[in-house]
Image 1 (cartoon, helix red, strand yellow):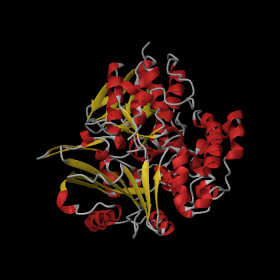
Image 2 (cartoon, helix red, strand yellow; image 1 turned 180 degrees about the horizontal axis):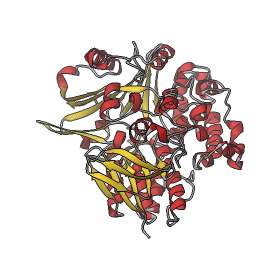
Image 3 (cartoon, helix red, strand yellow; image 1 turned 90 degrees about the horizontal axis):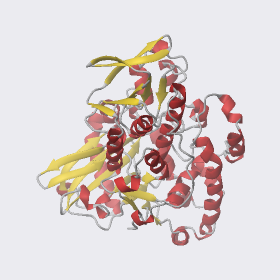
Image 4 (cartoon, one colour; image 1 turned 180 degrees about the vertical axis):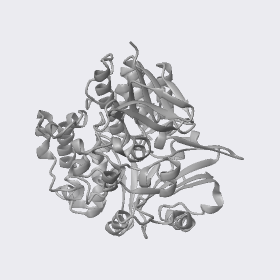
Length: 520
Protein backbone atom coordinates (compact mmCIF):
# COMPACT_ATOMS: atom_id res chain seq x y z
CA UNK A 1 0.00 0.00 0.00
CA UNK A 2 1.34 3.43 -0.96
CA UNK A 3 2.16 5.77 1.90
CA UNK A 4 1.40 9.47 1.45
CA UNK A 5 3.90 11.85 3.08
CA UNK A 6 3.61 15.63 3.25
CA UNK A 7 6.73 17.79 3.33
CA UNK A 8 6.21 21.32 4.68
CA UNK A 9 8.78 23.60 3.07
CA UNK A 10 10.87 23.26 -0.08
CA UNK A 11 14.16 24.32 1.48
CA UNK A 12 17.30 22.19 1.01
CA UNK A 13 16.29 19.71 3.73
CA UNK A 14 12.75 19.37 2.42
CA UNK A 15 13.90 18.87 -1.16
CA UNK A 16 16.43 16.21 -0.14
CA UNK A 17 13.83 14.43 2.00
CA UNK A 18 11.28 14.53 -0.82
CA UNK A 19 13.80 12.96 -3.23
CA UNK A 20 14.75 10.15 -0.83
CA UNK A 21 11.18 9.41 0.22
CA UNK A 22 9.95 9.26 -3.36
CA UNK A 23 12.84 6.95 -4.25
CA UNK A 24 11.81 4.71 -1.33
CA UNK A 25 8.30 4.39 -2.76
CA UNK A 26 6.31 7.01 -0.89
CA UNK A 27 3.78 9.32 -2.50
CA UNK A 28 5.19 12.75 -1.62
CA UNK A 29 3.52 16.16 -1.67
CA UNK A 30 5.59 19.27 -0.92
CA UNK A 31 3.82 22.39 0.36
CA UNK A 32 5.75 25.64 -0.11
CA UNK A 33 4.49 29.06 0.90
CA UNK A 34 6.57 30.86 -1.74
CA UNK A 35 6.43 30.59 -5.51
CA UNK A 36 10.03 29.31 -5.65
CA UNK A 37 11.93 26.46 -4.02
CA UNK A 38 14.98 26.83 -1.82
CA UNK A 39 13.77 28.56 1.34
CA UNK A 40 16.72 30.54 2.68
CA UNK A 41 18.76 29.02 -0.17
CA UNK A 42 16.49 30.38 -2.90
CA UNK A 43 17.51 32.60 -5.80
CA UNK A 44 16.46 36.24 -5.89
CA UNK A 45 15.84 37.30 -9.50
CA UNK A 46 15.41 40.93 -10.50
CA UNK A 47 14.92 42.53 -13.90
CA UNK A 48 16.47 45.88 -14.80
CA UNK A 49 16.68 47.84 -18.06
CA UNK A 50 20.07 46.20 -18.63
CA UNK A 51 18.81 42.67 -18.01
CA UNK A 52 18.36 40.19 -15.18
CA UNK A 53 20.34 40.02 -11.93
CA UNK A 54 20.40 36.82 -9.85
CA UNK A 55 21.47 36.52 -6.20
CA UNK A 56 21.61 33.77 -3.64
CA UNK A 57 19.30 34.77 -0.81
CA UNK A 58 21.24 33.00 1.94
CA UNK A 59 24.13 30.53 1.68
CA UNK A 60 26.81 31.39 -0.88
CA UNK A 61 29.56 28.98 0.25
CA UNK A 62 28.89 25.50 -1.13
CA UNK A 63 30.89 23.05 0.98
CA UNK A 64 31.44 19.31 1.19
CA UNK A 65 29.33 18.28 -1.83
CA UNK A 66 29.80 14.59 -1.10
CA UNK A 67 26.66 14.35 1.07
CA UNK A 68 24.39 15.77 -1.62
CA UNK A 69 26.21 13.83 -4.35
CA UNK A 70 25.43 10.60 -2.49
CA UNK A 71 21.77 11.61 -2.16
CA UNK A 72 21.57 12.25 -5.91
CA UNK A 73 23.27 8.92 -6.61
CA UNK A 74 20.89 7.04 -4.30
CA UNK A 75 18.00 8.57 -6.27
CA UNK A 76 19.45 7.67 -9.67
CA UNK A 77 21.01 11.02 -10.60
CA UNK A 78 24.47 12.56 -10.86
CA UNK A 79 24.83 15.88 -9.03
CA UNK A 80 27.86 16.80 -11.15
CA UNK A 81 25.86 16.40 -14.35
CA UNK A 82 23.04 18.54 -12.99
CA UNK A 83 25.14 21.38 -11.54
CA UNK A 84 28.58 22.65 -12.47
CA UNK A 85 30.60 23.04 -9.28
CA UNK A 86 33.54 25.43 -9.55
CA UNK A 87 36.22 24.95 -6.91
CA UNK A 88 37.65 28.27 -5.80
CA UNK A 89 41.31 29.07 -5.23
CA UNK A 90 41.70 31.28 -3.32
CA UNK A 91 38.62 30.22 -1.39
CA UNK A 92 38.21 33.71 0.03
CA UNK A 93 40.22 36.70 1.17
CA UNK A 94 40.28 37.76 4.81
CA UNK A 95 40.95 41.41 5.62
CA UNK A 96 41.73 42.33 9.23
CA UNK A 97 40.84 45.91 10.13
CA UNK A 98 43.62 45.72 12.72
CA UNK A 99 46.14 45.06 9.94
CA UNK A 100 46.92 42.22 7.55
CA UNK A 101 45.33 40.17 4.79
CA UNK A 102 45.18 36.45 4.20
CA UNK A 103 44.29 34.74 0.93
CA UNK A 104 42.84 31.41 2.03
CA UNK A 105 43.99 28.71 -0.37
CA UNK A 106 43.51 24.92 -0.25
CA UNK A 107 47.16 24.58 -1.31
CA UNK A 108 48.64 24.03 2.15
CA UNK A 109 52.17 25.12 1.22
CA UNK A 110 50.81 28.43 -0.04
CA UNK A 111 48.50 28.67 2.97
CA UNK A 112 51.50 28.37 5.28
CA UNK A 113 53.19 31.16 3.33
CA UNK A 114 50.09 33.33 3.77
CA UNK A 115 50.01 32.66 7.51
CA UNK A 116 53.76 33.33 7.78
CA UNK A 117 53.31 36.83 6.34
CA UNK A 118 51.16 37.69 9.37
CA UNK A 119 52.41 35.36 12.11
CA UNK A 120 55.65 33.52 11.20
CA UNK A 121 55.63 31.29 14.28
CA UNK A 122 52.08 30.08 13.62
CA UNK A 123 52.74 28.91 10.06
CA UNK A 124 54.53 25.76 11.22
CA UNK A 125 51.41 24.61 13.10
CA UNK A 126 49.08 24.57 10.08
CA UNK A 127 49.89 20.90 9.24
CA UNK A 128 49.28 19.86 12.88
CA UNK A 129 45.91 21.68 12.85
CA UNK A 130 44.95 19.83 9.65
CA UNK A 131 46.12 16.44 10.92
CA UNK A 132 44.36 16.65 14.28
CA UNK A 133 41.12 18.00 12.80
CA UNK A 134 41.19 15.27 10.17
CA UNK A 135 41.20 12.79 13.05
CA UNK A 136 38.46 14.75 14.85
CA UNK A 137 36.18 14.70 11.81
CA UNK A 138 36.78 10.98 11.30
CA UNK A 139 35.65 10.36 14.88
CA UNK A 140 32.64 12.67 14.74
CA UNK A 141 31.37 11.79 11.28
CA UNK A 142 29.51 8.67 12.53
CA UNK A 143 28.03 10.78 15.36
CA UNK A 144 26.76 13.38 12.89
CA UNK A 145 25.25 10.64 10.71
CA UNK A 146 23.21 8.91 13.40
CA UNK A 147 19.98 9.98 15.13
CA UNK A 148 19.88 10.98 18.79
CA UNK A 149 16.70 9.78 20.46
CA UNK A 150 17.75 10.11 24.12
CA UNK A 151 20.65 10.41 26.53
CA UNK A 152 21.27 6.68 26.01
CA UNK A 153 22.72 7.52 22.61
CA UNK A 154 25.58 9.31 24.37
CA UNK A 155 26.98 5.92 25.41
CA UNK A 156 26.83 4.31 21.98
CA UNK A 157 30.29 3.14 20.81
CA UNK A 158 30.68 5.85 18.14
CA UNK A 159 29.89 8.57 20.68
CA UNK A 160 32.24 7.15 23.33
CA UNK A 161 35.07 7.08 20.80
CA UNK A 162 34.41 10.72 19.87
CA UNK A 163 33.90 12.15 23.38
CA UNK A 164 37.60 12.70 24.21
CA UNK A 165 37.83 15.03 21.19
CA UNK A 166 34.76 17.01 22.23
CA UNK A 167 36.70 19.00 24.89
CA UNK A 168 33.65 20.63 26.53
CA UNK A 169 35.92 22.88 28.61
CA UNK A 170 37.11 24.64 25.44
CA UNK A 171 35.48 26.84 22.83
CA UNK A 172 36.64 27.18 19.23
CA UNK A 173 39.00 30.06 19.97
CA UNK A 174 40.64 28.44 23.00
CA UNK A 175 41.09 25.18 21.09
CA UNK A 176 42.73 27.04 18.21
CA UNK A 177 45.03 28.74 20.71
CA UNK A 178 46.82 25.39 21.04
CA UNK A 179 47.94 25.89 17.43
CA UNK A 180 48.00 29.63 16.79
CA UNK A 181 49.16 32.45 19.07
CA UNK A 182 48.13 35.35 16.81
CA UNK A 183 44.47 36.23 17.28
CA UNK A 184 44.13 37.13 13.60
CA UNK A 185 45.14 33.62 12.58
CA UNK A 186 42.70 32.16 15.07
CA UNK A 187 39.99 34.34 13.53
CA UNK A 188 40.96 33.06 10.07
CA UNK A 189 40.24 29.52 11.29
CA UNK A 190 37.22 30.37 13.45
CA UNK A 191 35.06 32.97 11.66
CA UNK A 192 33.31 29.90 10.18
CA UNK A 193 31.44 29.60 13.48
CA UNK A 194 29.28 32.35 11.97
CA UNK A 195 27.87 29.63 9.67
CA UNK A 196 26.22 28.47 12.90
CA UNK A 197 25.37 32.01 13.92
CA UNK A 198 27.74 31.80 16.90
CA UNK A 199 30.80 33.51 18.34
CA UNK A 200 34.07 31.51 18.26
CA UNK A 201 34.44 32.48 21.93
CA UNK A 202 31.23 30.55 22.76
CA UNK A 203 31.00 27.97 19.99
CA UNK A 204 31.93 24.41 21.17
CA UNK A 205 35.45 23.32 20.23
CA UNK A 206 34.07 20.54 18.01
CA UNK A 207 33.50 23.14 15.32
CA UNK A 208 37.17 23.74 14.58
CA UNK A 209 36.38 21.12 11.94
CA UNK A 210 34.49 23.74 9.89
CA UNK A 211 37.59 25.54 8.62
CA UNK A 212 39.35 22.20 8.22
CA UNK A 213 36.60 20.96 5.91
CA UNK A 214 36.99 24.04 3.71
CA UNK A 215 40.69 23.38 3.21
CA UNK A 216 40.37 19.59 2.99
CA UNK A 217 37.35 19.33 0.67
CA UNK A 218 37.14 22.76 -1.00
CA UNK A 219 34.87 25.77 -1.29
CA UNK A 220 32.70 25.62 -4.40
CA UNK A 221 30.61 28.02 -6.40
CA UNK A 222 27.72 26.31 -8.23
CA UNK A 223 27.35 28.03 -11.58
CA UNK A 224 24.18 30.06 -11.27
CA UNK A 225 24.60 30.24 -7.48
CA UNK A 226 23.50 27.92 -4.69
CA UNK A 227 19.94 28.41 -5.93
CA UNK A 228 20.93 26.39 -8.99
CA UNK A 229 21.47 23.42 -6.68
CA UNK A 230 17.96 23.87 -5.29
CA UNK A 231 16.55 23.94 -8.83
CA UNK A 232 18.42 20.74 -9.66
CA UNK A 233 16.92 19.09 -6.59
CA UNK A 234 13.45 20.22 -7.61
CA UNK A 235 13.96 18.75 -11.11
CA UNK A 236 15.10 15.45 -9.62
CA UNK A 237 12.19 15.35 -7.18
CA UNK A 238 9.64 16.02 -9.92
CA UNK A 239 11.21 13.31 -12.06
CA UNK A 240 10.71 10.92 -9.12
CA UNK A 241 7.01 11.82 -9.01
CA UNK A 242 6.97 14.37 -6.19
CA UNK A 243 4.02 16.79 -6.31
CA UNK A 244 4.78 20.45 -5.52
CA UNK A 245 2.06 22.76 -4.23
CA UNK A 246 3.73 26.15 -4.61
CA UNK A 247 2.30 29.29 -3.05
CA UNK A 248 0.22 27.18 -0.67
CA UNK A 249 1.24 27.82 2.96
CA UNK A 250 0.31 25.29 5.60
CA UNK A 251 -1.88 26.85 8.30
CA UNK A 252 -2.11 23.99 10.81
CA UNK A 253 -0.91 20.44 11.46
CA UNK A 254 -3.77 18.23 12.64
CA UNK A 255 -2.90 16.22 15.77
CA UNK A 256 -5.20 13.46 17.05
CA UNK A 257 -4.35 11.53 20.23
CA UNK A 258 -0.76 12.67 20.03
CA UNK A 259 -0.27 11.76 16.37
CA UNK A 260 0.00 14.01 13.30
CA UNK A 261 -2.74 12.95 10.92
CA UNK A 262 -2.84 15.70 8.32
CA UNK A 263 -2.66 19.39 7.65
CA UNK A 264 -4.74 22.35 6.63
CA UNK A 265 -4.07 24.95 3.94
CA UNK A 266 -6.32 27.62 2.49
CA UNK A 267 -7.41 25.00 -0.05
CA UNK A 268 -8.74 22.71 2.69
CA UNK A 269 -7.69 19.85 4.96
CA UNK A 270 -5.90 16.66 3.88
CA UNK A 271 -4.81 13.51 5.67
CA UNK A 272 -1.32 12.04 5.44
CA UNK A 273 0.43 9.00 6.86
CA UNK A 274 3.38 11.12 8.02
CA UNK A 275 4.49 14.74 7.88
CA UNK A 276 8.01 16.15 7.48
CA UNK A 277 8.56 19.73 8.68
CA UNK A 278 11.27 21.69 6.87
CA UNK A 279 10.00 25.10 8.00
CA UNK A 280 11.92 27.13 10.61
CA UNK A 281 11.55 24.97 13.72
CA UNK A 282 10.55 27.53 16.36
CA UNK A 283 8.22 29.40 14.02
CA UNK A 284 6.59 26.18 12.80
CA UNK A 285 5.99 24.85 16.31
CA UNK A 286 4.50 28.10 17.54
CA UNK A 287 2.19 28.53 14.54
CA UNK A 288 1.37 25.02 13.27
CA UNK A 289 1.24 22.71 16.29
CA UNK A 290 -1.02 23.69 19.22
CA UNK A 291 0.98 24.39 22.37
CA UNK A 292 -1.09 21.85 24.32
CA UNK A 293 0.12 19.10 21.95
CA UNK A 294 3.78 19.76 22.78
CA UNK A 295 5.44 18.50 25.97
CA UNK A 296 9.15 19.23 25.55
CA UNK A 297 9.03 22.06 23.03
CA UNK A 298 6.28 24.25 24.45
CA UNK A 299 6.13 27.97 23.70
CA UNK A 300 7.45 28.66 27.20
CA UNK A 301 10.45 26.34 26.66
CA UNK A 302 11.16 27.83 23.24
CA UNK A 303 11.21 31.30 24.77
CA UNK A 304 14.12 30.20 26.98
CA UNK A 305 16.21 28.73 24.16
CA UNK A 306 19.26 30.37 22.63
CA UNK A 307 19.06 31.44 19.00
CA UNK A 308 21.67 32.43 16.48
CA UNK A 309 22.47 35.92 15.30
CA UNK A 310 20.63 37.54 12.42
CA UNK A 311 21.95 39.36 9.35
CA UNK A 312 21.51 42.69 7.64
CA UNK A 313 21.60 42.10 3.88
CA UNK A 314 22.21 44.16 0.76
CA UNK A 315 21.68 42.61 -2.67
CA UNK A 316 23.09 45.05 -5.22
CA UNK A 317 22.97 44.90 -9.01
CA UNK A 318 25.89 47.01 -10.23
CA UNK A 319 26.80 48.65 -13.51
CA UNK A 320 30.43 47.69 -14.12
CA UNK A 321 32.66 45.25 -12.24
CA UNK A 322 35.07 45.09 -9.32
CA UNK A 323 37.57 42.61 -10.72
CA UNK A 324 40.16 43.36 -8.03
CA UNK A 325 37.78 42.19 -5.29
CA UNK A 326 37.79 38.45 -4.52
CA UNK A 327 34.83 36.16 -5.12
CA UNK A 328 34.41 35.94 -1.30
CA UNK A 329 35.79 38.62 1.04
CA UNK A 330 35.45 38.67 4.82
CA UNK A 331 36.32 41.92 6.61
CA UNK A 332 36.85 41.49 10.36
CA UNK A 333 36.50 44.57 12.55
CA UNK A 334 39.43 45.78 14.63
CA UNK A 335 37.64 45.06 17.92
CA UNK A 336 36.13 41.71 17.00
CA UNK A 337 35.24 40.82 20.57
CA UNK A 338 33.22 44.01 20.98
CA UNK A 339 31.58 43.33 17.62
CA UNK A 340 30.44 39.91 18.82
CA UNK A 341 29.35 41.21 22.23
CA UNK A 342 27.04 43.74 20.55
CA UNK A 343 25.55 41.01 18.37
CA UNK A 344 24.95 38.75 21.38
CA UNK A 345 23.20 41.67 23.08
CA UNK A 346 20.77 41.83 20.15
CA UNK A 347 22.30 45.00 18.68
CA UNK A 348 23.52 46.11 15.26
CA UNK A 349 27.33 46.44 15.71
CA UNK A 350 28.73 49.95 15.81
CA UNK A 351 31.81 48.87 13.80
CA UNK A 352 30.50 45.91 11.82
CA UNK A 353 32.38 43.01 10.40
CA UNK A 354 30.97 42.06 7.02
CA UNK A 355 31.11 39.56 4.17
CA UNK A 356 30.90 40.34 0.45
CA UNK A 357 30.29 37.93 -2.40
CA UNK A 358 31.48 39.35 -5.72
CA UNK A 359 30.46 36.26 -7.68
CA UNK A 360 30.60 37.83 -11.13
CA UNK A 361 34.40 37.51 -11.14
CA UNK A 362 33.75 33.75 -11.38
CA UNK A 363 30.27 33.47 -12.86
CA UNK A 364 29.18 36.09 -15.42
CA UNK A 365 25.77 34.39 -15.81
CA UNK A 366 24.53 36.18 -12.66
CA UNK A 367 24.33 39.66 -14.21
CA UNK A 368 23.76 41.34 -17.59
CA UNK A 369 26.81 42.00 -19.77
CA UNK A 370 28.96 44.77 -18.33
CA UNK A 371 27.29 44.43 -14.92
CA UNK A 372 27.86 42.46 -11.73
CA UNK A 373 26.22 41.44 -8.48
CA UNK A 374 27.28 42.21 -4.93
CA UNK A 375 25.90 40.28 -1.97
CA UNK A 376 26.66 42.00 1.33
CA UNK A 377 26.04 40.35 4.71
CA UNK A 378 26.51 42.03 8.09
CA UNK A 379 26.00 39.83 11.18
CA UNK A 380 23.71 41.63 13.65
CA UNK A 381 21.67 40.74 16.71
CA UNK A 382 18.46 38.77 16.32
CA UNK A 383 15.10 40.20 17.33
CA UNK A 384 14.86 39.77 21.09
CA UNK A 385 11.64 41.34 22.38
CA UNK A 386 10.94 44.65 20.66
CA UNK A 387 14.65 44.99 19.85
CA UNK A 388 15.98 47.34 17.20
CA UNK A 389 13.54 49.40 15.15
CA UNK A 390 14.89 48.15 11.83
CA UNK A 391 12.47 50.02 9.53
CA UNK A 392 13.76 53.25 11.08
CA UNK A 393 17.41 52.19 11.28
CA UNK A 394 17.78 50.48 7.88
CA UNK A 395 18.63 53.60 5.79
CA UNK A 396 21.31 54.69 8.26
CA UNK A 397 22.75 51.19 8.52
CA UNK A 398 22.75 50.86 4.75
CA UNK A 399 24.80 54.06 4.46
CA UNK A 400 27.20 52.81 7.16
CA UNK A 401 27.61 49.53 5.28
CA UNK A 402 28.29 51.21 1.92
CA UNK A 403 31.01 53.33 3.58
CA UNK A 404 32.52 50.20 5.12
CA UNK A 405 32.76 48.54 1.68
CA UNK A 406 35.33 51.16 0.68
CA UNK A 407 37.78 49.40 3.04
CA UNK A 408 37.96 46.42 0.66
CA UNK A 409 38.19 48.45 -2.55
CA UNK A 410 34.50 48.82 -3.44
CA UNK A 411 34.38 52.54 -4.12
CA UNK A 412 32.16 54.84 -6.17
CA UNK A 413 29.33 52.40 -5.52
CA UNK A 414 26.20 54.46 -4.93
CA UNK A 415 25.91 55.86 -8.46
CA UNK A 416 26.44 52.41 -10.02
CA UNK A 417 23.56 50.63 -8.28
CA UNK A 418 20.92 49.50 -10.80
CA UNK A 419 19.02 47.16 -8.49
CA UNK A 420 18.86 47.02 -4.70
CA UNK A 421 17.14 44.87 -2.12
CA UNK A 422 17.60 45.35 1.63
CA UNK A 423 16.71 42.58 4.07
CA UNK A 424 16.80 43.21 7.82
CA UNK A 425 16.20 40.88 10.80
CA UNK A 426 12.58 42.06 10.75
CA UNK A 427 12.38 41.01 7.11
CA UNK A 428 13.86 37.58 7.85
CA UNK A 429 11.25 37.16 10.58
CA UNK A 430 8.21 38.40 8.67
CA UNK A 431 8.96 37.63 5.01
CA UNK A 432 10.76 34.31 5.56
CA UNK A 433 8.90 33.15 8.72
CA UNK A 434 12.10 32.80 10.77
CA UNK A 435 11.71 33.03 14.55
CA UNK A 436 13.37 36.22 15.84
CA UNK A 437 14.96 36.60 12.40
CA UNK A 438 17.66 34.18 13.65
CA UNK A 439 18.91 33.19 10.22
CA UNK A 440 21.02 30.25 11.49
CA UNK A 441 18.27 28.79 13.70
CA UNK A 442 18.77 27.47 17.23
CA UNK A 443 22.27 28.16 18.53
CA UNK A 444 24.71 25.24 18.57
CA UNK A 445 25.69 25.40 22.23
CA UNK A 446 26.46 22.10 23.97
CA UNK A 447 23.07 22.16 25.69
CA UNK A 448 21.34 22.45 22.28
CA UNK A 449 23.22 19.75 20.36
CA UNK A 450 22.72 16.04 19.72
CA UNK A 451 19.91 14.68 21.96
CA UNK A 452 19.32 18.20 23.36
CA UNK A 453 18.33 19.46 19.90
CA UNK A 454 14.85 18.82 18.44
CA UNK A 455 14.96 15.24 17.22
CA UNK A 456 14.60 14.04 13.65
CA UNK A 457 11.70 11.83 14.70
CA UNK A 458 9.93 14.61 16.59
CA UNK A 459 9.55 13.56 20.19
CA UNK A 460 6.39 15.54 21.00
CA UNK A 461 4.11 14.31 18.20
CA UNK A 462 4.28 10.87 16.60
CA UNK A 463 4.14 10.76 12.83
CA UNK A 464 5.91 14.14 12.70
CA UNK A 465 9.51 14.38 11.49
CA UNK A 466 12.00 17.24 11.20
CA UNK A 467 14.65 18.20 8.67
CA UNK A 468 16.73 21.35 8.40
CA UNK A 469 18.95 23.47 10.60
CA UNK A 470 16.61 23.29 13.59
CA UNK A 471 17.09 19.57 14.14
CA UNK A 472 20.09 17.26 14.56
CA UNK A 473 22.85 17.54 13.30
CA UNK A 474 22.35 21.34 12.84
CA UNK A 475 22.83 24.26 10.43
CA UNK A 476 24.83 24.55 7.22
CA UNK A 477 23.96 22.99 3.86
CA UNK A 478 25.97 19.72 4.16
CA UNK A 479 24.60 19.14 7.67
CA UNK A 480 21.05 19.94 6.58
CA UNK A 481 21.38 17.36 3.79
CA UNK A 482 22.61 14.90 6.42
CA UNK A 483 19.52 15.66 8.52
CA UNK A 484 17.41 14.64 5.53
CA UNK A 485 19.24 11.32 5.30
CA UNK A 486 18.79 10.60 9.01
CA UNK A 487 15.12 11.59 9.00
CA UNK A 488 14.19 9.62 5.90
CA UNK A 489 15.90 6.51 7.26
CA UNK A 490 13.75 6.76 10.38
CA UNK A 491 10.56 7.54 8.47
CA UNK A 492 10.96 4.74 5.93
CA UNK A 493 11.61 2.27 8.76
CA UNK A 494 8.49 3.46 10.58
CA UNK A 495 6.31 3.20 7.46
CA UNK A 496 7.83 -0.08 6.27
CA UNK A 497 9.02 1.41 3.00
CA UNK A 498 11.92 0.34 0.79
CA UNK A 499 15.41 0.67 2.27
CA UNK A 500 16.75 2.14 -0.99
CA UNK A 501 17.41 5.47 0.72
CA UNK A 502 19.69 3.84 3.30
CA UNK A 503 22.76 5.49 1.81
CA UNK A 504 26.20 4.27 2.88
CA UNK A 505 28.18 6.65 5.10
CA UNK A 506 29.99 9.46 3.32
CA UNK A 507 33.66 8.72 2.76
CA UNK A 508 36.56 11.14 2.82
CA UNK A 509 37.70 10.16 -0.66
CA UNK A 510 38.72 12.88 -3.13
CA UNK A 511 36.06 14.37 -5.36
CA UNK A 512 35.19 11.69 -7.93
CA UNK A 513 34.66 14.28 -10.69
CA UNK A 514 37.90 16.32 -10.80
CA UNK A 515 37.16 17.55 -14.30
CA UNK A 516 34.30 19.60 -12.91
CA UNK A 517 36.43 21.16 -10.16
CA UNK A 518 37.64 24.15 -12.12
CA UNK A 519 40.29 26.21 -10.31
CA UNK A 520 39.72 29.94 -10.65
